[in-house]
Image (cartoon, rainbow, N blue to C red; front, side):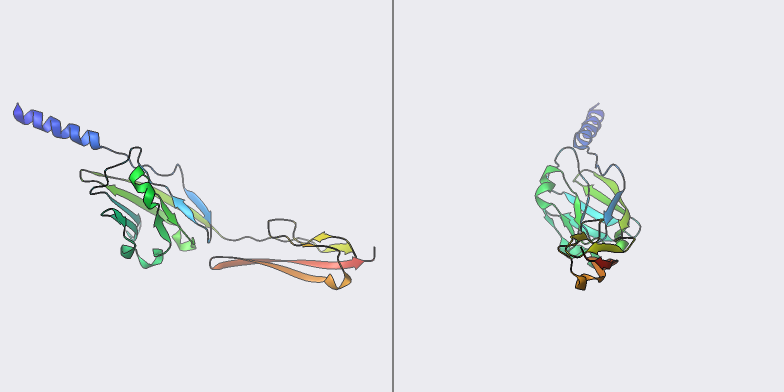
Length: 198
């Protein structure tokens, strides 16, 4: 009888400590060169004593980042992730083990595992970076005509438009907008062709 009650007590202790590691509701998509947050959290904060959190690439087991002995361990990271992968250190005590990955690269696409270890058990979740979007810059698909003295917007789409005020005849020509993000770049050209007299 004594043995049965001690086994039951052990089972109850494990259930009380039980936790589920949660991640995002679906795959992540982010632009090249941006920062992306890989969610990983538990509903109730865990004891910090003996808490260890590992982020790894699923296919290669590459260590992306490690939290151990109450602090981040950037010295253990694989070199590609140094200065790019960060915990929200103050959030760990609240059960948030999410990772911020900066300066996103095309090769960051893939599956990651977040594994949380406590003294009694461990749990994990998977996060997929489904796509790293490359830059797409588009300009005007036609030449732009204007009268001298008019205002003209060269690239009507996007946030990188340039507005020329009081156009002069010497403004005629080809204009190029070039956008850089991380190691990627893209450009678009616009021809300001005909300048008639107003």
